Length: 76
Ligand code: FES
Image 1 (cartoon, protein in one colour):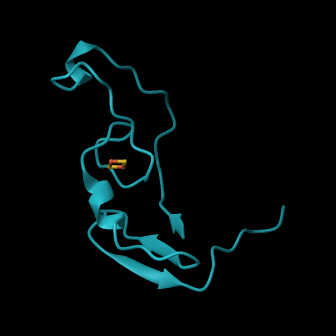
Image 2 (cartoon, helix red, strand yellow):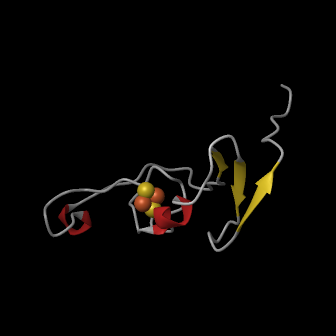
């Protein structure tokens, strides 16, 4: 599967001890859906039923998704 998620952040994230989970670990979002990016907020659960070879586009608020033909890149 492929997933298109839009990001608007333009600056680096800074972490401190308050970002650590109870077990002392830091969970970084890799699905792109977290509203706490770059930290995981559990939103990755929405991807659990994604299917191989399908392209998904998620709404900016992470509340919905659509299946799209492909992610098109503009030519430079
Ligand atoms: S990995 Fe993205 S919200 Fe958890």
